[in-house]
Image (cartoon, rainbow, N blue to C red; front, side, top):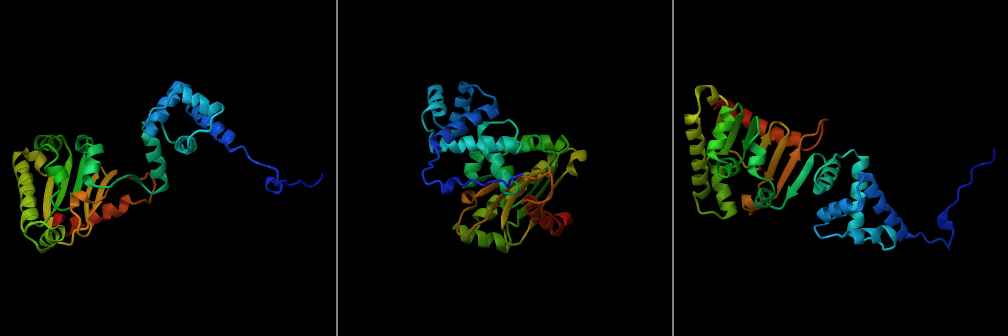
Length: 281
């Protein structure tokens, strides 16, 4: 047999790839990967883009008009999601799942806690939880944003709750007040208020449920506000210098089926604090 001959298109000075044709072909491939009609695929793209896409525009992009760059990025994500086994879901979940698979177990990152809560309801995090581990400063997401009565219901229903608050009369909460520019005693008062909520909740629980609610305080430098739910989901917020807690970035993580990722690191932060302070409460 003769030796295989390698042909380099780069060596052909007169070769010019038709990028428009390649782009149109990729868009059509993405639609066929999803098994969608043009109206269905136009609706999917519109959801991903955040602006209207007509069936006529889609038809033109697949035939004789080069698609816009952001549409091509969406098509690429759709094709990649099929190759990585991402399941069906909301259109924006495709992007979240792909990014999450590339960047450990991070499934979402938000510029602030308020931005996170605008897109993710506290009820969706806690309503069906069987175990909630929380540590931070005042734990407002649990004590102020979530209903007292609903919190009582989930503990009575079998959920376990372990909470660690920053000591309201300790040195490190005073340092945090100064760093965030609060008047002295403001964060202390809020934390004491939330501890009172926990105490009243404990009083209202039945004898059988009381052992499932545990809370304590710690007096150490505060680095993260953490909520770990059912050992699978984590809401993590760092405390940044000269930045109010509510304005700091918030990360949402989902534990990987296999080892690795960021989730175990945050889990160890809570476990270490609990062993030092909560286990003795």
